[in-house]
Length: 424
Ligand code: FA5
Ligand code: MG
Image (cartoon, helix red, strand yellow):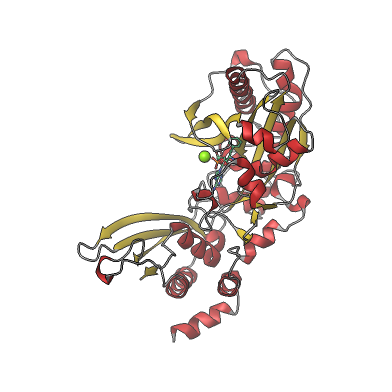
């Protein structure tokens, strides 16, 4: 029977463990392979592994804040305290409440955030540490860490990624306009520093300690876009032109007075800025890494290309062919018009559930999940969605057999786990 087939798959592999865990743990929505990575020691985290591009990038950004920033602005350098091993398990209070994230904000939902229990999450951003560090008295700091989100699957999204938050609080309560200007100048300066960092070549393998001068370089391809965050005002995002598209690399703004208050800072006497940047996004641009999964690769052909302190252009060792699989399902996302009482089950279909189910079974063999077709039944108003799953390994060729096996597991798990919200 199909159940017997599934049971055999369940007896091995991490997809199996994830499936079992999901049906026994009621409160937590964290698959074991995610929790395992969250509980890794600080030195095992990618941003702390010497030679890893995320570690090199972190250190280059920290160096900018240490040395260049003060110099550029003609002021003595400010001491930014640096944190890169704060544990990723945080309270909902730190992650959301103190940052003024509304109780019904979508980012809090279990479809988007990993919950250990009602009051504890895997941090969805490094901003989760900002109020606590303010309370400890820090007025200028950088926090780097692994962050966790249930999200879509493509070359730019991965359920674990790395962020750096930066905070600067000024004691002389300068105007918001001034703070905003200082923020934009600081981050534009950072972008210039990064984009003008010499790319290594065969001729010059020695690490550089400072960036090129401004004079000899063309303008860097970045733009500011208006944004919204509950914890900042005048919020902006910085985008970088990459492979013909604008790629969002960071969010920032002037810290809301109530967030300062939560950090025991008096907003009548202080104002400040904050930003949060995605290390992978920047590293993809700077190191020319075409797919976010590669950062997790243990393939020597990847790892060997990077050296501490050097921005190397990644040389793809090969591009293996993709395998496409489509799956169509009827999803329950509204009261059914025909059932009379119009009640809903409470649980609605969410794309992130499908993405995680596939990720749990396929691991890093899944490259992309995209909606390719959609159809609403005229009478029942039920929606049918077709998703295309792209399987491709960054390191090797896939066999039809292994992909068919995974795809069968995906269909089985949709039937078993998502039966209340989707029907094949
Ligand atoms: C935040 O997380 C805010 N905490 C940033 C912030 C901090 C704003 C302080 C203001 C003040 P956002 O969700 O946009 O914002 O994420 C910030 C960056 O993380 C993005 O610009 C992007 O570079 C990166 N990012 C977001 N989601 C992913 C993902 N799934 N995979 C890889 N990188 C991601
Ligand atoms: Mg954003």
